[in-house]
Every structure is written in structure tokens, then in C-alpha cells.
Image (cartoon, rainbow, N blue to C red; front, side):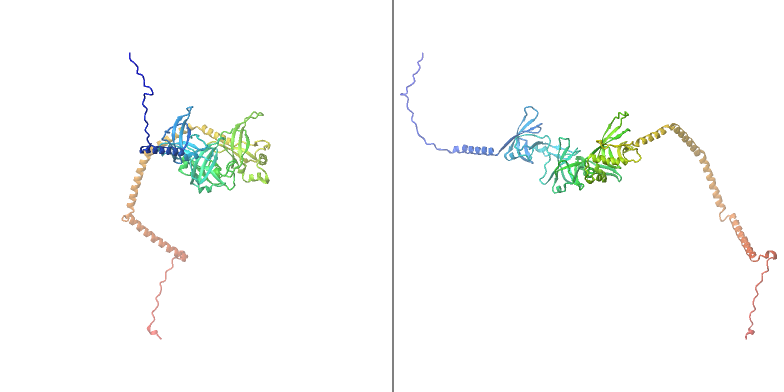
Length: 553
């Protein structure tokens, strides 16, 4: 059994001796202290320069990478992506980005973010630089003042950026047509701006935002008219075919053109400001005088109006003053008939001087004034008549014309809308005449005529064949005989032949005989008594005697 040693008591333990030393710093501590100071200063500076962290929600995070995807404002890097996660409902992608401190003032409630990718459109090409540098998040700030850290990203780029000099205008239209962002804006076929944005308003209309660069923005005036210059304008008029377009870019991507309109100042859009204008469909509509408010009229026709459609013109003595709005089928209980009810909208301002008479002496352009004016025209024979616009297409239009020979019609000025008296169109009579003509053509014995014609052609062919086989050889023989006869006659009448010599002598004797007969006729004319007494003897002239030389005095 082993014995456990007993520990010594306190009195038996030795007391330690303490030595005092002075603490002297050494050079080895300088390096960590300097590193700590530098690290603290870097942390402080990083904290001072650290910008805000924002979150952006996108439907897709394609091309976004943590630490590589940058955030740029006007092509200047202002941050980078720090995290990419899915939203709690897994419907969107939440991108966290750390921005620099100087970009904090750009974070407003209306700031927009979008992913810049290569986009190739008909009118513009953008983002091609990202093919080499990679995709990045674009940033565009707005005029708002409220601060925000959470944003919803755009799937498409916002309105294009533009320079500080110029004017931004808003154009209102029912349809934007083929206009695209980046489409050119022309003034007298010279590009002065471009389309920077287009939006669909809650009422279904379109708002197109354009930017006109300085100094060309001075051409935009209160009377300026804008129209859609997209595509090619082809017109067939009295002067022939006219093709007009602004440029090839306008044909492909659309375009907007503007110019000075009528001098009369009319608000471009309801409740608009000098930066709001109406975008017309074409130049003709843009430069037309203002139409004013339309007035609706109704017409009842007792004949079929196949070919009359909504949008067909309504003409007053040949001038377009409106268009057809609707073509409906009515019902008359009295005679159980089904008239065709046509509703049209008219623009009294297109009536020219008649409109001036309508609004003369302070009268307003109201339904009551228009009804009274139309009643005066009806008493003079104004009637609505459907007429054919084209025999090829069969389209119809409504003509308002004076027909004094038409039956008298009743007019109630209290009806709303105003109902115009009508007469049947003459196109049905034309159709009936054409039908009768076609029937007569169908009644012709065409088969018998063709058979007879075939027989006549066959007989003619046989006759020509017989002529070729019989008559032509005989004619050739006759011509040969005639040729031989002419040769014989030529040899007979030759100057060396006896016949020719005898003929010459005979002609000389005949000439002498004729000379003698002429002398006899002349003698009898001078001496007619020679027929009784005979020819008188001719006296010979006596010679005179020569004078003698002795007779000289």
C-alpha cells in the first residue's frame, strides 16, 4: 500500500523575488500600428464614399451577373450589381445594386431602370456595344423630388434621351400607325428631330412624344400642323399618278412631318398647351381648313343599298362635307317595309359661304340653326340620293343635290337628328339596263354563229387553195405571153425595120398633103369666087428699065 506525500505548508514555501523593468517600445510594433491606421482610414473613407443600396425588380434576370453587371447613367458607371435573388412569390427577379455616393441624388420616385441589350428594330439599332462589354443596367432620372430605394424595372427601354436644346412636343392621334421610337421628324423634307416615346392613353388614343432640335424648334408655331409621313402616298388624280414620300427611313420605320397650316389659330388638342398638337393621318387632312364640330343627320331609303358602307363620303353638290357613320335596317309598321336607315355626320364649315350665311348675324352653329337652314334647302329641292362611286367596285356614296323635279317632301325640323328627304338612285336602272343587255347577248345563237363562221372560213380556205392551184399557174402563163408580145412589138418598132421607114414616109406625105389643103383653104378664103371662075392667073412682076446715061441733065 503506497503512502500519499503530504504537501508542504505555507511556511516552508520560498517567497519569489520580483525584478522591476522599464517598458521600452520597439520598432517591430510600428508596422502593425501603421497598417491599423491605414485600414481604419480606408474604412472611414469607404464609409464616407459608400452609396445607397437599391433593389430593382425585373421579370427576367437574363444577362445579369453579380459583381460584373454595371449600373450606368448616361454611359457613366455609377454602381454594380451585388446580389440577384428570386422574389418570395417566384414571379420576378430582385436585383440588388450598390451605387456610388454621388448617384444618391438620382434616386427619385420616377427614376427608371432597364437592362440594356442589343436591340435591332426597323427604325433604329441600339445596344450593340453590349455584344463585347456585356449587358448592363441603364438608368434614367425624372423630374420628381421624392426619394426611393425600391424600383420596378422596365422590360423595354424608355423614351430616348435628347440634348438640352430643343423642344419636346406631344402629338395626339387615334392611331400611331407604323411609327416607332427613333423615327425621324421632318420639316419640308429636312430631318429636324425624332420620335422619343409613344404611349397608349386610358381612352384608347395614342400619345407620341417627339423632340425637335434647336434651332429648328422655332418653326413650330401655334398654327403648325403635324401629320403621319409613314409609307408611300400614292394618288391618282386629274394630273396622273402622283407618288410622294419623305425618305426611305420614313417608308420603313415611319416618320412625322410638320409645316405651317392655315392662318386661323385653332387649338391643336382639347385642353392642350403650346406643346400639344394633333397628329393627322396625312398631309391633305392636316392642311385642310378646320372642320369644327360634326352634326348628325339621318336618311331613309326604300331601296337596297348594297355597296354603301360606313366611311362612304357624303357630298353636297359635288363637295365632300361628311361621311356615312352607320347603315342600319329599319322597320315601318304601317306598310311592313324594311327601309335602309343611313346615319351620317356632316361638317357645316365645309360648305364655305353657306356656312357663313348659317352663322351670320351672331347666330351660333347649333342643331336648331342647322335644322332651320336645312329646311330652307329642302323647300328648294334638296334631296339625298345614293349614287355609284365606281362601276368596277360597286361602291356607293350619298349625294345631297337639288332635284326640283322630285316630289314634294315633308320636313320636320324638330327631329333629332335631322332627317333628310331622299329619292331613289339611278344605279338600279343602270343595273337593269346592263342586265337586259346581258340577257340579249345570252339570247343570241352564238353556237350557230360560230358554226356558220367556221363553215365560211372553211369555204374560204378551199377557194384560196383552188386559186393557188389553178388560177395562179394560168396567170403566170398569161404574163409570159404578154412579155413575149411586148418584146415582139419592141423589135417591130425598131428604127432599122422597114415598117418604121414606111411609116416615116407616110407621115411626111401626109404632112405635105395637109399643107396643100391649108393653102387651098386660105386662097378660097381670100377669093371665094374662084369656085365659079377658077383660079386667076398670077401676074409676074415687071422689071423697071435702068435709066440711060444720056438722060442726065
